Length: 421
Image (tube, rainbow, N blue to C red; front, top):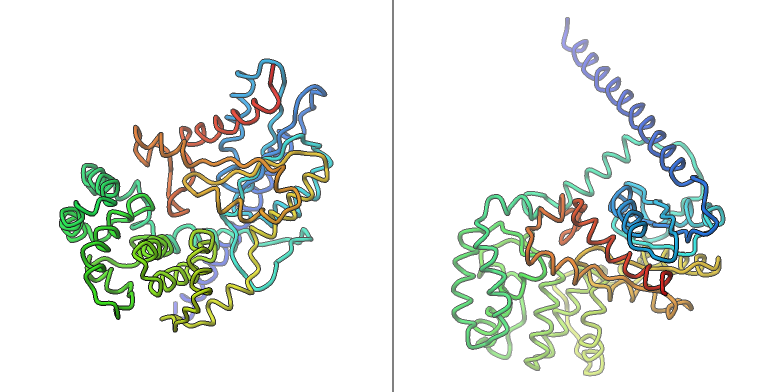
């Protein structure tokens, strides 16, 4: 058998494997959709309050079934019917055009709970899903793998993974240093401890509540001693600790530096860091808007160390989550239902409120935060007890315990609204 025949057989094998994989994915997708439709089409008790749950893989078969059990157990005066319309690997546009527009009148829910946006991306124009054309699920699977594995680099971002390799006492020590880091008198001591930790564990991922342990002592002991002409450089910071930018979410770093500079009345560097946070993540604007506004009033201008076209691109970007949430809120309230906008675990509710603050229904929207309840649980449990992975950076797909925490939070709101004595 010559070389070309061998290559042909290899390619044929790959092609056949892909075809088989596509067939299996199509069958599994159809099966799951059919099962979901069967579950959701159960006869509605005319006396039951229907709750429609919208989301992606963090919703699909996750917290809604637990919510149903909690409501069945705790409700004293009302009956509830929980509809699970979570869809794995789908974005907010799909949920709006395929669920809200097409199924809202069918379900006629009294309440719609949304936890959406994890699969959204920014683009220059909307990609509107208005048809049901056949799509290759193999391609969708590859995109999903790229988004949730390659982009997030699990070796650094999966808290459960590095907890197994790093002494838990070290993590607890960092958290303790973070709490003490606002004390200037202890900054020199904390700086020394953090320097030793980063030297020993250069690839550790510093999630949001650990960031102050790195920045505050560095700011007090290093930055404050630089002359007035010093212009902030993130490279100085990472080189000092000998860690890479992949060890943390960059916008969180810039925001805390911006606030420290602002408090120190170093407005040039405060504005610089604020704008860098905005470039890295446009949603950061809510945290540093007052600093940027102050910079505009003082006519503080600068040449940023990144192309200014990046800022302009963000200004013209079509933000899917914000746009979809606005349209979704209008359709839900116009149908007579109540919208409950829920934020992902650990993420700030302020970001979600910013998405909807220009909606004419803003005052009627009920917001649910999952920050306090998860932080409380983390005091007595490990990350891996709550999350199966950390694809979202500071959150991921929940374990049964994590989903129960969400469901209990939602149930408390639902019962307070509809099960009063």
